[in-house]
Image 1 (cartoon, helix red, strand yellow):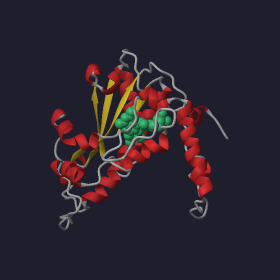
Image 2 (spheres, rainbow, N blue to C red):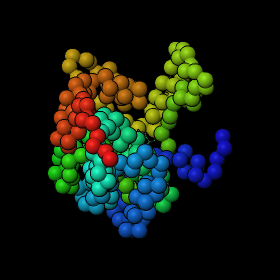
Image 3 (cartoon, rainbow, N blue to C red):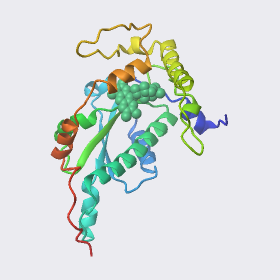
Image 4 (cartoon, rainbow, N blue to C red):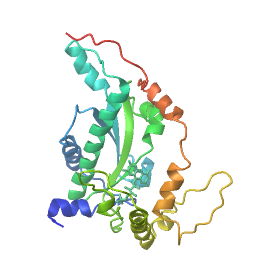
Length: 261
Ligand SMILES: Cc1cc2nc3c(=O)[nH]c(=O)nc-3n(C[C@H](O)[C@H](O)[C@H](O)COP(=O)(O)O)c2cc1C
């Protein structure tokens, strides 16, 4: 594989969940966000909130960024030009997720290049209403994801990924034979077990209902973990639709005709 410093930095990525107390300087914070901004964008449909209240932040990280999808700002620009939004909210949100995610990962890489570790927190969207109150967000701004950041107080090895042949398909989607699925599962499960990842994090997801536990930390690994997540959680979209509604987004509504010039 080709490796240079940038690729090496990416291949060494690992989420950090233990942080030193030392606060990154203002210049470092601004550099991280500025590098984030330079990610490719469809329409820069994001805003970034930062909290430095270490004692309140997850993992007691010195920084907690909340990356929001932001249509409010853009609609202010449209209004200045005499336009209103004609695009439906589902399309807008997809583009917003793309913009915000690319920016967030640029922040991770920029941070890493300056010695900072980070860890995403994915459930901000279910906490959107509370976060909106906390930061006085206007309508049409939706907290998408949070990113804890600071100087690492741990140095775990990089975590495994699927084999490349389970990810990269040339020309057409490849036939997914059982052998390849097994290989992918094995690579993930053995990799996480070698690191004692779930035991260290005490991160086993409980089984709901009548299902009986048959895994301990010697056998519980990534594929079981991820199945328990998506096999049990959030069967209804209503909670998320409600969070969006409170923030002024309605994903099923057709917009009126634009009043453009
Ligand atoms: C969208 C997203 C949400 C995540 N949410 C959480 C979270 O809530 N808690 C957590 O500890 N890690 C969270 N993570 C970190 C993942 O667990 C981590 O990236 C994954 O296990 C791979 O490990 P690595 O980043 O160390 O390579 C999240 C990552 C992403 C991209």
